[in-house]
Amino acid sequence: MEFLPISPESLDKAAGVLRSGGLVAFPTETVYGLGADAFNPQALAKVFEVKGRPRFDPLIIHIAALETLEKVASLSLLGGETRQKLFLLAENLWPGPLSFVLPKNEKIPGIATAGLATAAVRFPDHGSARSLISLSGGAVAAPSANPFGGLSPTRAEHVRDTLGEKVDIILDGGPARIGLESTVLDITSGNIRILRPGGTPKEAIEKLIGPVGEDYGDRGESDIASPGQLKSHYAPRIPLSVFSGEEIIRTPYEKGRVFLFFDGRTRDLWLQARGQTPSNALVKVLSESGDLIEAASRLFETLHELDIQATSSRIFAQFAPQEGLGAAINDRLKRASCKYK
Ligand code: TXA
Ligand code: MG
View 1 (tube, helix red, strand yellow):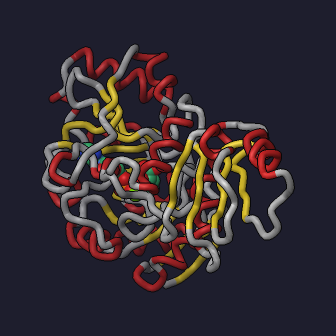
View 2: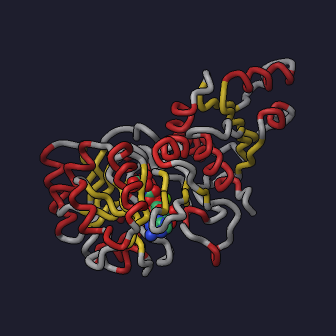
């Protein structure tokens, strides 16, 4: 494995590795991806193996130019009105943290999409990711670069520490700007719905095309439209429980408990309720001011930090307000806690 800072040379080298069927972990604006050439079935098989990912879980295909969309999706299979909505969304929200589930183009090998007739496609808002994709042949399949079910990587070091030698190159582009995965939107039919809340808020989508459905939540393995819907996912190794603000304020401090507050105000109320600052208390706040964008960008980052605290036995986390990026933060917290059980 080579761990390389982003440069024209390292991008060239990494693109060569992709073209010859290797695996490259690379930064995007959401989280780090584990990339393989989307047209190469052997390379795609390696992605599943390295992540320990079940073969029923399809990959997102990353493109770096709108023209490539036709090569990975079959847009002619969409109804006229749906196609118009797709273009409206793509024009306004791409490049960005939004993946469209579309009828798949037959050139994309079945293994990429877990045998489904649909493919998820994303155009990332990250210059280096786009250079890598263009230099490598135009379409890179990339799940988040973490072992299946674990926390998504927001830094190159997270990839190194969890996948390490199983990857040919890890490109280091610093911390991910958004820190949460893309929103996955099923747009294969007139029944447009969100399969995974993520970096593009539902509100931004609805502003452009009107009301869309939501199809995530309480599901078992046999009944999933998108495996990010698996009830236990995005989980740290330490058990996590998640509470409303009122509930967490009432939760006492005990040794080994770690508190992860959404905002500074709730933390202060929790401290006041204790009467004095508990010594040795491990307390983290996602955003002092309660800013959803800041909180989203710090969620996985903070969970990674807490996960390596040897003395902690349980994380007590607070829900964010259920609006904007709060929907995605809360979804990840519920799955980390297995709340959908
Ligand atoms: O932000 C992101 O989306 C990151 C970066 C690397 O781009 N990628 C990512 O990939 O999160 P992954 O594989 O960890 O999550 C992809 C999600 C999964 O929940 C998968 O089930 C869903 O997208 N998905 C992919 N193809 C699908 C399809 N054809 N139909 C329904 N869901 C699909
Ligand atoms: Mg993932």
